[in-house]
View 1 (cartoon, rainbow, N blue to C red):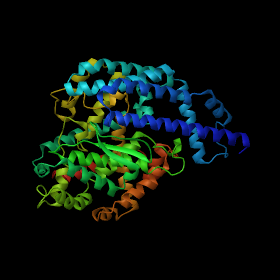
View 2 (view 1 turned 180 degrees about the vertical axis):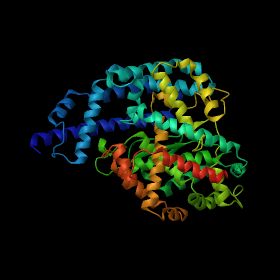
View 3 (view 1 turned 135 degrees about the vertical axis):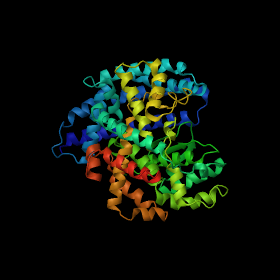
View 4 (view 1 turned 90 degrees about the horizontal axis):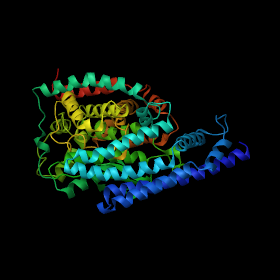
Amino acid sequence: MNEGIKEAYSALVQRLQENNRLGGIMGILHWDQEVMMPSGAAESRAQQLGTLAGVLHEKTTHPEMGKLLEQLPEKNEGEFNDFEWCNISEARRDFDMATRTPKELVTELAELSSRAHQIWVKARSENKFSDFAPALKRLVDLKIKWAGYVFPDMQAYDANIDVYERGTSQTEITPVFDKLKAELIPLIKSIQDSGYKPDTAILEGHFPIEEQEALGRKISEEMGFIFDKGRMDVSVHPFCGGSHPTDVRITTRYREDNFVESLYAVIHETGHGLYEQGRMQDGRDLPVSEALTMAVHESQSLFWERMVAQGKPFCARYLPLLANTFPNNFTNISTEKFYEAVNVSQPSLIRVEADEVTYPMHVILRYELEKGLFDESIKVEDLPELWNAKMVEYLGVEPTTDTLGVLQDTHWSGGAFGYFPSYTLGAIYACQFYQALLQAEPKVENQVEMGNLTPVRDWLGSQIHQQGRLLSVPDLVKQVTGEGLNPETFLNYLKNKYRQIYRLN
């Protein structure tokens, strides 16, 4: 590598690190907005985030950044290792995207997203979709406008999907979702029509929040979450945020009559947190170490929540801990009964409370509505009615309020259109990854049953977390599982598991 190219790369790295740290500051402000911020600060926080977004945009699009990228080759002909070339490629993509976006649009989107979130929180609590609709319409309009600048050759919705699932479009997603829809709707119906119902009464009772918090923290620690480099708090909507692998922040929410919701939210968000804490040691302020896509991120949370924590070995291990924590609720309960209770499948109104059989239908519904918003075949004001109709068609349940329907998710208030598909793509990847783990470590479920979760964490760490962005998603999935995205693996897993639970022979 000649001296000029070497100097250009070093200067690029310094700029990328500065941008990453600014992004970390924004991450803490977003976390604070959800967890700690007084409601009266909403307007000033929107302005702060808008200003920071503008500063970050200016730094990302600075002419000096363009000059550095011009000095670096378009193709890697051996001057750079994979680590370095990934940083250059990511910087080039970010620069190209940012320079195509007017700063005014970046600032307006950041400010509107922050304001819209506060409007959504109020509209949700008051069951008034009409109060949120104008902000939502403006967000959709701005995201269509943004897509026209950044990806002029793409459909607007594909451009928004690409933010979360690079290289993935409706062309790939729609056939997968159509297949899931065709096979899951009959499975859901047969489960509901079966004569067998797991006993969920064992999960009912009074569960003091202090005990729930201690239980969640203990299991999170046993999964490998490092609380010296992270924390757990309460928010309206559970999430994982923070600023850096050394500052990862997860949240949950509590109900005294339902410990399952909180506990599995902690496990889910810890899965995200382990991905962030487990990123490669080198280049932690650089793009190469960042999570690959949101579907891969969701695969990690769903891997722990669904594949591990809802499996029999985990249930066998942690049922005694539950009995110690809540002695009035879990005496004389078998592992089998507990396993069936936490895996009960029942259509519900709320996505985050849905089981793994019905969950994809919640995602597909949102995907289809987003498609309609972006191709302008659906008007914002028609969303509640369309939402409710699809809930009846897909799950056989109908929301009685918009709070239980179209207003339940935070995503649209933040302008995160195109994110929802990541959940179900992540569920498919999680299932494929788990099958790969069982092949690589045939005795891993015995370890889980003994309370040793380290082999699971270490395998995910080496196979996925520490890979950063060195590989594309298809290449990573192929490297780990030996095949590409395969909904059949997911469908077979669901059919086998739930036919057994519900005696559907």
